[in-house]
Every structure is written in C-alpha cells, then in structure tokens.
Image (tube, one colour):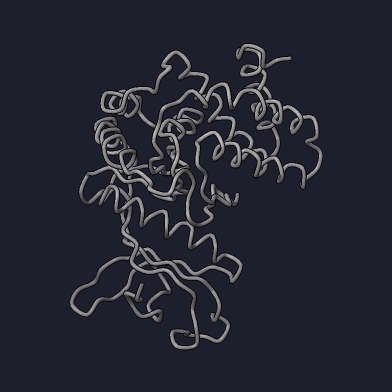
Length: 293
C-alpha cells in the first residue's frame, strides 16, 4: 500500500495535511518488530472489510527504506499508520451496538481458506504462527500447542504442560469435534482494554487485534475473564448470534477458550495465571466423561 503521508511528520500522532490539520495514529518499531506490525495491519484490514468503522482504518504499513528515511538509523524499521480515534470507555448503550455489530458483521465474515490466518499475529507479545487448518479442533489445538512450546522453553512448567497435553488429547476433541460451525473472523484479544467509544461519533470501537478465523464463541472468552465489558454486549450479541449447539456445553467451551488466555498470560507474566490455568483444566478434565483417566 502506498504511504499516505511523508514520514517526516511521524514525530507525533498529529500529521499536517495539505488543507487542514488531521490526526493519525503512527508508530515505528524495531527491525525485529516487522512481523508484529504486519500481523496487526492485516488484522485491521480484514476487520475493516468485515465491519467498516468498527476498527481504525489502516492507512499504511511497511518498512522504512533509503527513499523515505529521515535518519540512517531508521532504515529497516517497520512503520504503521492508521486513523486516530479519541477513545473513551464503553458505555452500556454502546456495548449493545458493539454486540450487534460483532455478531452480524465481524462474526459473519467467513474465510474461504479454512481456519487460521495468512500471517502470524500477536496476542499481547505472544506470537501466534497461524497458517491454515481444515478443521477448528486442529486450529485451536495448534494455538494451544504453540503456548506449550513457549512454556517448555521457559522451564519450570513441566507438570502444567503435562496437564495441557491431557486437555489436548481428551477435551479438545470431545468439545470441539461435534460443532457444526464456519470459520469466521475474530478479533482475537477482545477484552475491555481493547474496546471503547469514539468520542467524536459516539460509536463503539475495537482495536489492538490478533485476528484469525475460528469459532465465534472463542472471541467472547477473554472479556468475561477480566470483566469490564458491559453485560449488555453479551446479551445483545446472543440475540443476533445464538450459542452453538450443543448449547448445554457453552460454559465448558468458554472454559476451554479461556484456558488459552490463561496459558498465554502464564507465558507473559507467570505468577498466579498458572494456577488459574490449572483450575480450568481440572474442571474440564473432571467434567468431560472419561477425560480424567
């Protein structure tokens, strides 16, 4: 995509247009941040195509070269430029609008290539390698497996990883194989800190995605973990997009999808998140028939 504005204006988030002052969100990373910038850019592009205006519009993303450098030291560094939105807290009324838009637009945007995503994305600082999978259980198992490899590399999580392997072997097939679903576009990290309202328009906005195509219910898990998203979001969402069958296993599926985020937070922060992950796995292995053996 061609650069929308000259890099010489990138010192702050305000860039001077030829006719009137506009505001943009801009950032420049380290050379090894390229995949992270591309992942966020591709996520925003897909989400804007699915639900225009629900996310900031991407304007440009690339790598600084000799033609657009301001300083020699900038060559090879990735850059990212998008709309700037002055974001405030998500109100209950805006959460209803958000619930409808996520259900009817974002989670109605289907992939023709299967489950996964065409580039790596980052949930926080954690790289998700993605790729394409024929089934949702394969895709979700790969996401969990990527976290297991990171935990093993860190060391000190041997028993936790052994328990995760039991979940991969026994719980994921039991809960996800029966689903009759389509691969739809997910935000990937939809917690309260990545939601808000545009103070200029009053409309809901979501941002900082780590997208992939998967089961729509997976996008609801982290928001309930940490709270902060009004309950009106969830009730409105399910008015337009009912819980998947078997509906009686919805709560267990949410536990499984939350496990991904507890494991990811263990990778990122350690501490009590490992205990929360164990508690989720204990419940899943205890509840699924035959899984505790």
